[in-house]
Length: 227
Image (cartoon, rainbow, N blue to C red; front, side, top):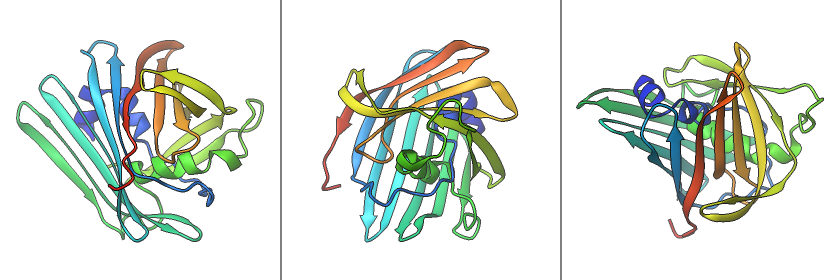
């Protein structure tokens, strides 16, 4: 997703970086519509929309949209809850810049072994309680996912202890995840996930060479469970 990654935010790209982890069956999903405020070094501030929708039965969809100046992008993944975890079965993304852009799609066959980035974001959030890398001294968890073209990518991370996090939308119980691309250890992504709502991000911080380059925080949350 070059347009969204370059022009909307490096942070959002890493947020969208899917992660393949065994799901916590006790974490029950619930629909939500969230808005985040993004501060990106070198770009104007922007809002990011994130929606988790129940499609019926065991099928769900996670979608993010963002825009900055003349650039905008979206990404959505559809997945099915199963007894042994989560199976992604459709992915779509796209971006436009000055009216020109590209679109990407991945089918169920292409997602048979690796989740797409949106589906995997949901998967990661459900597996934090049982992740073996909950201590900084523990070996990092290592994850595999498919990028927007279906190519395998890697991600490493540690999981922090639950804590109360205050953001513009209110106070939330959250767990911080510190992650990085093994090939780019100088870039660190801190993701705060809701403890109660799988898939919901509370805050994001992106560090480059030890300096905070971008941040994102939850500003609005619609908990309408009829969606």
